[in-house]
Image (tube, rainbow, N blue to C red; front, side, top):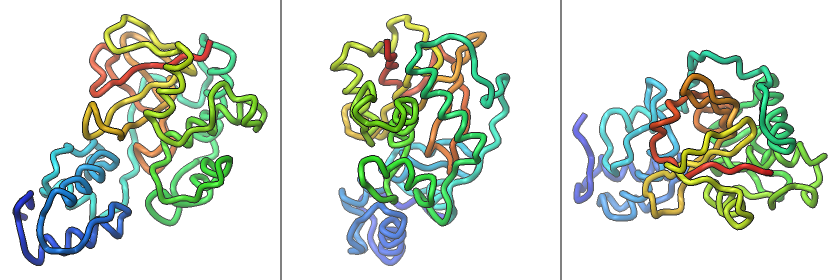
Length: 250
């Protein structure tokens, strides 16, 4: 297929705009690939994967990989790993370890989207403490839920307010002096949060996960909404792309 990009016009653009809207990234079906369409495409790319389970390039243009992702649900990823994400590692603080235990429990329960993108009973559970429905990106709601579980399902006892935005969670940690910037030399411990930027370093979109462990220069995390389920991922610690920072509850 040809690449659709800003400035293009016609039926293919109108079909793209309708598909973006159906997937939860609304833009008017004008048939003109305008700035609002670019913004919707970038938002979609920042939160979805290609057919190989890799994050889409966030460039605002629609080539074969982005079109495939628009046409298909988020793929389930079988990510080989040197660690067992269902086993609690050693180290970390009391609150973080309790949150990590909740995340591990969700892996064992098979927590995932059911019935569509950002939908289903597990996703509803993560938004329920703040009386929100499904349909939105749920990575931060999942992390907040883990700390909520760790606090006896009492929002008043959580170390930070129940928050459903990745950057907003990081901001809560920063206000409390609990963050560590990229390049600071900090080595995260089990139960820490890890936050990435999406689309733009200075924008509002982000993604968040929980640190499972660090071993032999590798960072192992548990994340929601990177794929359709709660699962573990691994990164080379010294070169984590688009990293905003880590947070540690003392």
